[in-house]
Length: 159
Image (cartoon, one colour):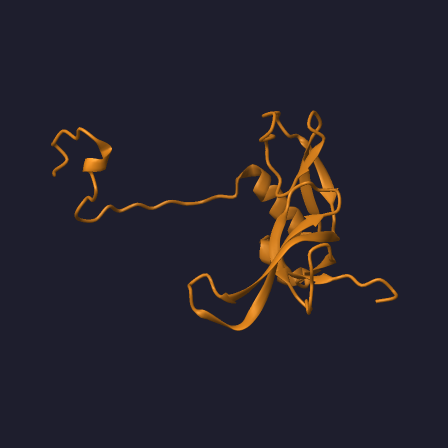
């Protein structure tokens, strides 16, 4: 079936032989850029929706609930609570990891959204555990989520 043939149903078009060159550039956008710039300085910022009384982290420029413009920035964290946790044995390429990694969804104090990141020093970390970020040295930071090396459990004085 060539490109000049009329297609009656979308299910009739199964494959297009040959190459289809596509390139793209993904940007983090205005909110993401500010978030990463502040992260480089060692701060977590979210955006607050006044009508919904929610703080979005990662930040957004509009509220997905009411579509209000989000212009108020609020510092959150740096400590937070583990809301979900898993152990990865394979990397993003599908190959086995040298050592398993613990990954978690973390709700930073003062935020309603969740941040996905690694957990270090995590023997037995569970949902509900309190964690805090371990940042790279200031001179090593690049304005990336990886400026946070990992989160580590926070233990009270008794634990």
